[in-house]
Image (tube, rainbow, N blue to C red; front, top):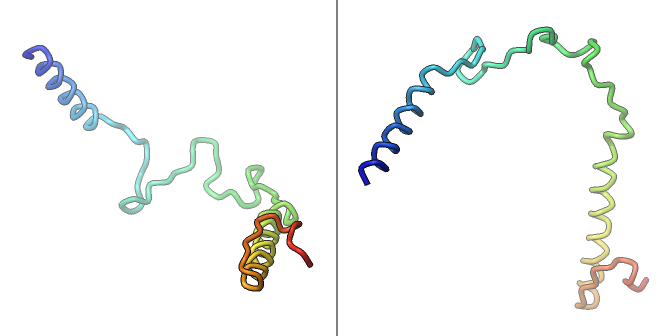
Length: 95
């Protein structure tokens, strides 16, 4: 029991001591606003080689997927309101 208590005390002391020596390498502009670019990385990304050139067609894929999902759900709900039967597979809903 004494050994376990000693180990626990040592572990807690090391945890408190290591928190005091932590180096974060940042200069905060305000509390919680401590972002800094890594050395060699530009502070502003726009117009540099790090600027991702996103294709609008690729970015729009998620919205197209969401629109298709909402259309399927609307068909399911309309059929349910009309017949009282829920059919998950939209292809099986009679026209």
